[in-house]
Image (cartoon, rainbow, N blue to C red; front, side, top):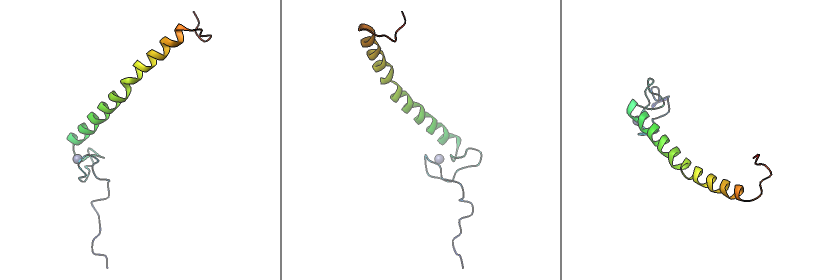
Amino acid sequence: MTDGEPSAQDAAPCPICSRPADTATTPFCSKRCRMVDLGRWFTESYVVSSPMPGAADEAKDEGASGDDPETPR
Ligand SMILES: [Zn+2]
């Protein structure tokens, strides 16, 4: 006979605090955790995209300095 059967634990747990997720805020357990995840996501994207514009600008500057056949004047 089956003793322990997970019934209400079908949904994946909250990725922030690992608590059972709520249907209204799935996959998070609450609005707060959803905001936490959003903020984390936002901060990460901010950090990742920060050094990119600078590097691209430098590379562009170097290319413009020399002979660039792909740059229509
Ligand atoms: Zn949570």
